[in-house]
Image 1 (cartoon, rainbow, N blue to C red):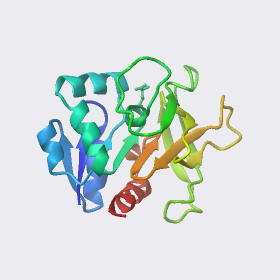
Image 2: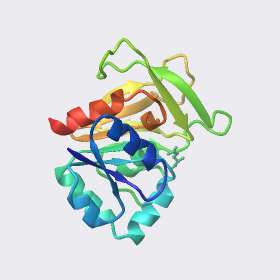
Image 3: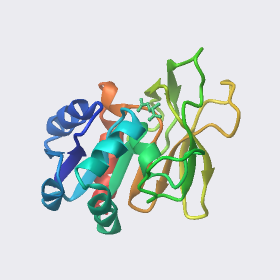
Length: 196
Ligand code: GLN
């Protein structure tokens, strides 16, 4: 399986390294032509407005939406924002997932943090997943066809339900960065769901 990683801005290299470690062929995607050879796509973390601006300049917004009609896509952090239908302010989005996100949901004081998540969908589910949050969004609304994959531990104060990962069919959104840890289980989960 060839997994594309949108390589316009952000931490795309970390994704390609994990994918290669799992024996996958990882393709850096910068043009519509690069997309054509891919079976699935990861949109990395970074700055969602910058990624969208560059995608627009490279005439990729349309091709990315079309790719999503037929193929699995996983967005991490800024990538999750791009997949969403709304970010509670005007900005170009792909709108592929029926979710709304709240950008920079944790404010300045906890700009970045790490926490352990319990994710029953992963291999060895009893082993917590160490999640890195960097100026992260929260998923503030999920549509009827969207499955919540995990929430923040309840001891964390948050303004809403603390949804940090969700899946809608072949789309996956995570508010944190599995590419910044050594734990490949989220990448394995995506590869598996992409093959379903
Ligand atoms: N705060 C960024 C945004 O709104 C996302 C941060 C990230 O991807 N780590 O796009």
